[in-house]
Length: 438
Ligand code: GP9
Ligand code: MN
Image 1 (tube, rainbow, N blue to C red):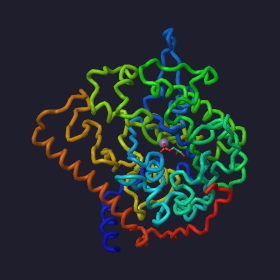
Image 2 (cartoon, helix red, strand yellow):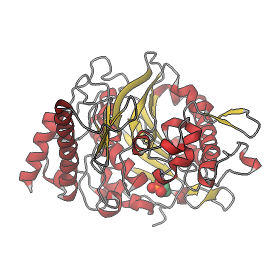
Image 3 (cartoon, rainbow, N blue to C red):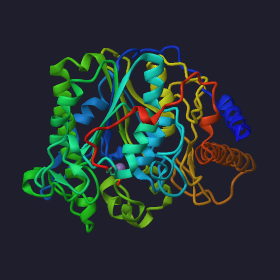
Image 4 (cartoon, protein in one colour):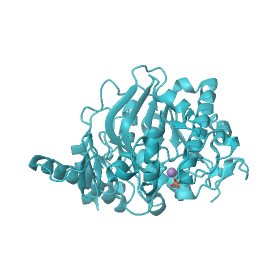
């Protein structure tokens, strides 16, 4: 009801983190190019894989060069917050600063029904941006072809826009190199400034796509085939992104754009992590849920050509924080929007990262499965001091509130009652993704 909307609004007002003056508007008017790094975990950055001769191979040299570039604002304590909706949950979080659902995918269940105030609509209405998603898979996967209309995306270039063959694709669509190559013809026609998202999907489970010599990258040597191939597909993604950057530079788009790269979720699941332990300098025998929680870090890098005060920021945050962070860089006031995250550059940003199931991470402690771990030692704390117990209770409550408010907004379709944003409701019928394979 409208009353529930008021509760949500009060929460958001109290939780609002004001922009950092030094960062607000530094990318105003620039195109936004999101590059979705499928299943890409933070540990891959700067990672070197040893082959059977002990020779080290840098997995993602290009992404590493961006990570260490002073025009890049990178975060090394940024966590994914998805649940069963995987990629689609990450999209929900990044586009709306709302969580996905506790069960299933919001895109699938509510994406074609709810009212949203998502990034494409905000940027269209406040700054005159056009918008497009590029993805070399069938448009109905995750109900994208309907959901994107509700998010206010003007264009969705799905597999039907690409030349997809048995040779250049796998079960989730076109491989990344042809994907970026073939995207250019559409990108060139977008009216600037544009807000765009490239969902590159090659680095997707089962990671057997590039395990032959043609892939040109060594396999890891564990008992788990999935882990063994993960580095080779990540390397292929890296080369693909590099080619795309070369195009952006050649075309001149680069100078007028901000490129945001993010990992959507883990590539190696908790159930496989023990087999990964040794490769990340840990011991299989002493691997715990603490380690599983730490592995949920994913990259978040905002590359702003022309800026030189970037660097690797250690602030703890998650995907829910991405939208207010980006909007503030673009000079958009978010104080009247219903967004549950907080600008990562804000002095008011609270370093408390909720997982979708109510577990959480802070700079010093990790709460998982009812156990509190000390981040410094990685050990479970058997008995909490009174003050720490109190602190943990407060965090739990904060996390529960954030997730509950998100669920109330989504399950109650509350944004349809919200008028204080100053935005006009998106009309999904305005959009027709001609060619989509639905
Ligand atoms: C498919 C791609 C994969 O289009 O987004 O989604 P995932 O399996 O990672 O959720
Ligand atoms: Mn995914």
